[in-house]
Length: 313
Length: 282
Image 1 (cartoon, chains in turn orange, red):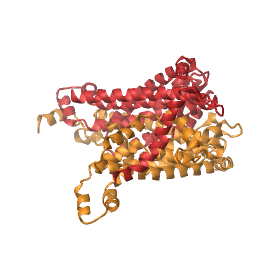
Image 2 (cartoon, rainbow over the protein chains, first blue to last red):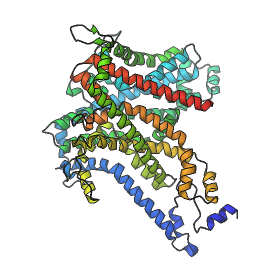
Image 3 (spheres, each protein chain N blue to C red):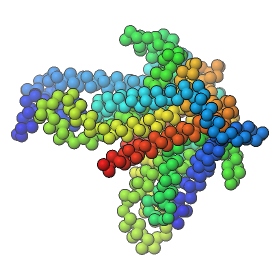
Image 4 (spheres, rainbow over the protein chains, first blue to last red):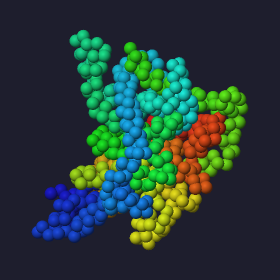
């Protein structure tokens, strides 16, 4: 037995070093002499469980009140609770009369369209940046970097003017879903995450394929893309989150309430005197569900994305 | 060949980032009069932004909100990370649950909290407060409490994000240091203060800069929660800019305000990068 272990044993419970606070697990509770309950360990576990319950209540409680309010027949903002008292679906049917399903479709079309475009654009650009040597590649990287420093909100007004008469092609994208989709189509962050990832893929695979006579696009589609699957998950989930967060852009592009996305429509629904809070909550729940589905199904990619994103900053 | 792959990105950036950027700078130098033709006014728009009392109030609120949200999120996120560190499956479950506010769209967060903050004594938060003998508070309804209430919502949405980053930092700490500290007879508190916190310093500096830059452009939360009111007690730079540009159609002044925001963000980002690069060399 090493000195360290002896010191640790001397305290009754083996000291744990896998967390900063030295939390002990449930097993330590029974670790007293002769399998008796070890009271300090039990107290530690109890404190931790209580704090975890409190944390879940604080951070999830508000979201649960949305669910219960949306399904409650008479939700009064003064009576939000964790469980509906008069469960019913009337809020959703009434919300439908105010066009909530239409807004949801707008949101989903924008999210789907912009996400496919964004991922494709990022993959192509990243392939060029990670794999090709060409003049001005540093300039291109810098141009992309500047777009990341530019707060999107700061160009909202000129962007809305540009969308009214797109240069060169002279189309008016105001009031169309494309007016929201196209500006979201290229995202610097997503390009950089993808570029970093592609740099780590060994070049030998592509070289071998080229020697075997595969063309540029075949190498790209059949060798590089399949290897990028983990990174595709990351940029897809972060991209979806970024698109679903959009508020100012769909607001300034809309020329008519029928163009609103669900998130934009929530405010106008709420300011409508005839609309009760239950209906707003039904809309809020519909806006919440897609982001929850995406997050819960791609959770690992999401967490990996924000940690690498933050470190690369 | 590389240009073919880059073309979609470059075209989209050119049309929807660079053209608007240039257009914004141009508009900021004109008095914009739809149908009548724009009039060159030089830097007058900038002067009117900088002397406008509403923009000044907004700048103060924006800074306060950015600082409060940034530090609040970091503190709460640190607490959450310490609480939820570990491999157990239940902990993983709790972490996923706590993270949900981050993926909830800001507009939805705003609507939820508007209702929870219902200012009557029987509002949701006020009911909870009454159990511990506090309140009722007016929250978003009074100029005295509105900015703090907005800040609390920012912390609620920001803390779990910080938690994830801090957890990644905690995972990178060498366990032998903890063991060594225990042998030296350090208490858990001393270990936290002298081993854990110093090891997290790089993570903290990243979080600080990211959040501060993001904080300057805050818009959606404030717009949905209060719209800048009551009595302008929560106006921030972006809400003032938008109401100037779209409601008052004062596009020149709004563009000048936008250029100023961009310049401040750019200066901050570059300063941080230079500082970090210098530290790495030195």
